Image (cartoon, rainbow, N blue to C red):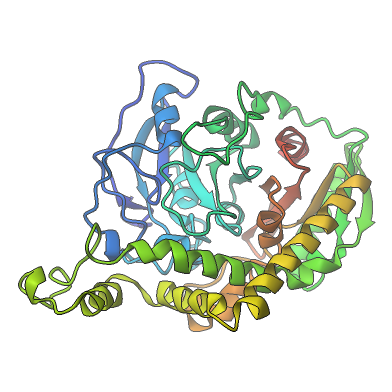
Length: 432
């Protein structure tokens, strides 16, 4: 396990003696609370923090008989596309250890791809389940917003994120989704659409008569090898009876900008709770004082803890989010981003009236080389161009292996209508 650095904490949590996941091991992303087991969010700020409760999804894993075999490495607080911003060092891609596994759920995807876990849970704020699934050659599902409880998920951007499954096959990913989906009284955003679900049964590969919409805006500009592999996968779906139609979604041009304004603004608010007084790193632990009475005034202690506890990418996003929400700039940036979000939702709704699912490459490029994304954060942000629109629209999406380009995995993304998990599972399973 240590060779890939897929885990931050390797500690087993046993589930029930029987259930649909009995005998299965599951890696759980380290921003999902596990009672009695350290949960760090990949950050020095939370190093040593042990939650007093389980997240709802962890409770459901235990009830289903799964064994959690560790807490998976991740970009710090979910902020990244490569799993290189983790305080605990980068995770390596098991396909090519000179490359990143994607992020922010890179540890989860790498563990599954390397056979270190049968299944995994990640969280997807702007593609953080689908990106590593594509880069590691496995399957990842981002559920419809509200289908899976976020109780016990350490918040990054509440209006965007969802917990989702990662697995070697579409059917196994759907089986895990069946376990974790459903309403939860502790999360008011959840719905009952997933109660008693059987998404795994939809993995029958029957795409006869299904219409697949292809938004050119999500294909143009992608790496040539990625596009070629994507087109071959679409040809395979057509050979199995699916029909394709081109659709137009001009709003996605604004998606990356809108996403980062909204996500960073929500992060600025959510991460304000890490103030060095209630939990997480404090001024004493940061080495600035022998005890809290010597830490100076509260502002100084607050600044010391956050300066020492957060990494560069987290600081960057907090600062940009705070700026976007500040007086005089809220309407100029945050309000406009929300307007763009509504436009994106409208484009998806209209396109999904013409097609059953929408298809694109999951990631426009093959896996980055280690260090490539850190040298220019804009490269990392722009790599999310095909995934962030789905989170802005609150829709379900799946990344399924489509083949390879230059020996590296390429994922195909399928987006469905709200609560259309069965449709995307069915279409994705046709490629296996």
